[in-house]
Image 1 (cartoon, rainbow, N blue to C red):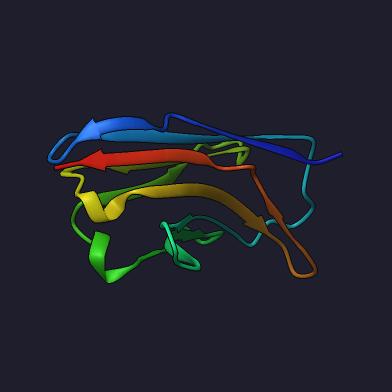
Image 2: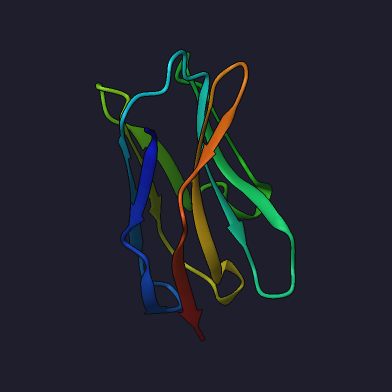
Length: 115
């Protein structure tokens, strides 16, 4: 059974940093991509950052040069280093992993950035 748990969220001031972690329990055959999404208050969930199995990454424009996504060698953890946080980064952050046929989600971790 697949289970993913996010950690590292919290409440910070603008300009500070947080590092989110996502740990996969169980196994997902043929993971193609791992990513972080966020749901800001009153908005739909949106992609923040993604790392493909090849190692290439892509980011939402608003977080480029501030956020960095990475994974461990075992492929069961994905991280999001968030620097120079802004109030508009506030939201619930979800870990996502997908293969060719399905995708899996964590339950989310809250990030709150105050000005």
